[in-house]
Image 1 (cartoon, rainbow, N blue to C red):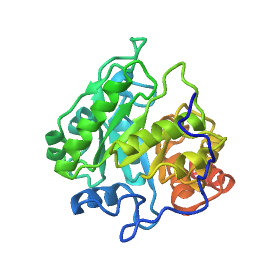
Image 2: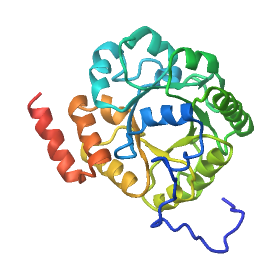
Image 3: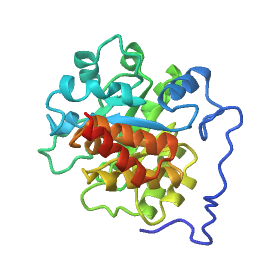
Image 4: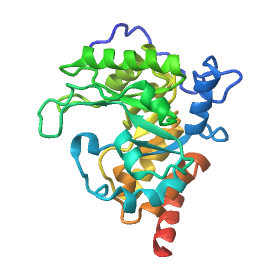
Length: 292
């Protein structure tokens, strides 16, 4: 994949980007309402978040582990920092008495039955996100996909609406079946999403060069959990991501498809907020699983 300039790669991953007056990278000049919503989603003490992603049904239907949101997910709400879900699930399943921050899936279109998934549109109005007291909205961006330009314009329209309402937008790097998942691609995708106005980015972890992805993105990055991994591997991935600059994780299948979702989300939280090592977090998982 070509890059605009290969004359030096001065990422300076060891030097933190300054955000005077606010704890979250790149967010210090936003309006109060925008900052307040970000401070709901990201823990001001650690500067990080454990988002629980359960939006898979918007194109996959009842994914394994999400057949019954009321039985599998609601018991996990106390252990996450924010829930990433659809407005349909929020209205139908999540108790209105909950104070947990909600980030809402705002794009949709093709189902898993279609070969090309990048043909998405904005699928909710910003007024509805405000009506639902959301803490943010998330939208897929298909950099390199067939409908790349449309997905980028979808995001910028959502960003414009979010700026009017004080609503943060999370741009999600959507990787197509034939795209290379490497640091070079994610540097491009994450930087484009940030440059075009998203307040934070959800992207995948790569073992080689992930710190260059986070360092070159001027807004926070949260790591996508991706496919189900063995628990120790998932905890190691989360640990490596936050140690290399991610501001937390947005994990789904690695939590709700675990043998013990409650134990797993507690272990992920210890990795993200307490910098616990993967080994110690896995020991915590096994202990909590045994005592469930």
